[in-house]
Length: 158
Image (cartoon, rainbow, N blue to C red; front, side):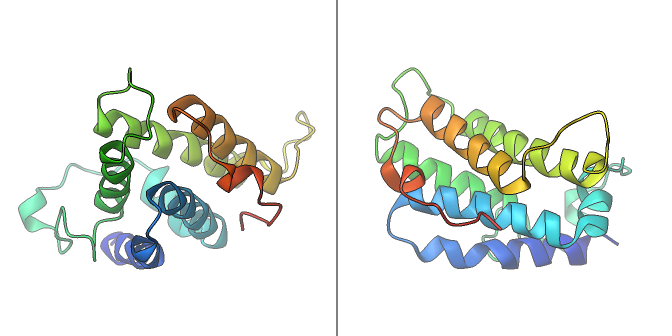
C-alpha cells in the first residue's frame, strides 16, 4: 500500500539530482523531503510513523538502489557525492551513517510537526524556523566549512 507513496516521495526528490553542487543538492533534498512530509501528513505518517510488517525486497514493486524509485538511495547518492568532494569533516568516514543522520534529523522535525504541532505544552517556533535550524545544525556539524548556501537563504523551506 505504501509503495505508491514511496514512489511519489522519490519522484518529489529526483529533480534535485541535476544540481551540480553536491552540498546544494543535499540541502534541496532535505527541503523537498520536508515539503512532502508536511504536504501529505497522513501519507507520511503511514510511511514512516507506523510499524510495517517486514517486506522481502524482492517482492516490492520499488526497485532498491534505483534513483528513479528509491528516495533513500537518492539521499545516499548525494551524501556520497559530498563525501567524494571532500566536503565532510575528515573524522566522518561513513557516508551511510551521515545519510541516516541527515534523514533522522529532518524526519524528527517533520514527525513532531505532524504529531504534536497543536500541543499546548510547547511554544513551537514556526516549522520553517525549526527546519532551517535543523539543516543549519546538520551542515555545521558535518561539513569542514559550513556553506553559505544555507546562511544566505531567507526563503521558506516549504
